[in-house]
Amino acid sequence: AYDIKSGKQLWANTDFKIDPTEAMAAIVDNGMIYGCDGEDLYAMSLADGNFKWRFNIDKDGKAGKITGDKAWAVDVAKSSYYGFNTITTTTTWSNPRRILRTDYRDSHFVVFGDKKIIRVNKDGKQAWAHEWKYDPNQKNLLFDPTYVGTNDDIVYACKGFYGVDGKTGETKWADKDV
Image (tube, rainbow, N blue to C red; front, side):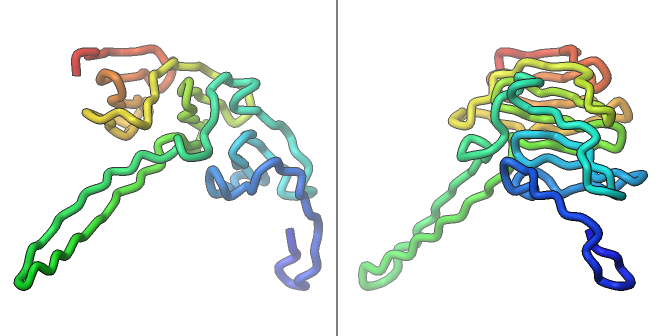
């Protein structure tokens, strides 16, 4: 951190396992820096750079990993145009979406790991865990997890279509035949 008037460095903290921008942008709120480095959620004091708490996504939350190739769902489409003189033009485009991720939701984090979806409150304590069957290779339906309503309920489709209560993590409804 730097003093904005003098440009003098006030403190530095490099105690991260992975680049802290890998998983989410840091959030500054009420004298704290909240963030995720891909393995740990953390709260750090803005005044001195010391960690107030750290929460390991895999070890503490049992959510699994949120980084790597499995973190992304990519739709790939191709179109070909056959012109005169046997010239073929092929266009390929993709739509990558980060599925495995950490979201900061004002009063808490929601982590979409490859094993579980977890909610961790701003005090570093896990509120709930919801097991899901994330499969990045699913061919028929992969609906990105989406927040719905004031409860921060979560709707997703992966090996079924599910509604999750944002306050408790319990399944509100499920259609496993999708």
